[in-house]
Length: 142
Image (tube, rainbow, N blue to C red; front, top):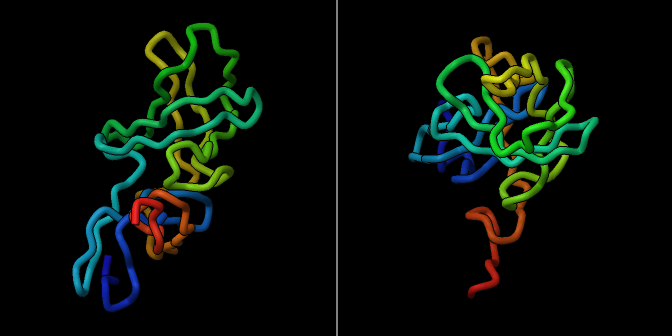
């Protein structure tokens, strides 16, 4: 990414494309920044399924889709169900579009990100200023 500290970019900011959440800023240099994509093997995002209200963790695995972890065995999840951020963990607010369920099988639940990560040209970085994150200007521990 060609924006850094000089542009006001800070670690932890949400990276959004037109259709939804893409990832978050994990490193910031003077002139550039690094984004951890939702599909990266190191990415974990607390989410909720829009219809069933089932909570899960979206986990990347370096493919074009992410998987859902920690679902109860008989969760009534349907292909086409929308996945949004849950707000748990304090990094993202609840309700940000993440993706849509594309497969439900014995191998797990797969989620296609809302934003086409292979065609991103511009990102919007958002500081939600949630308490307890790197972005909180006045942490409670001060």
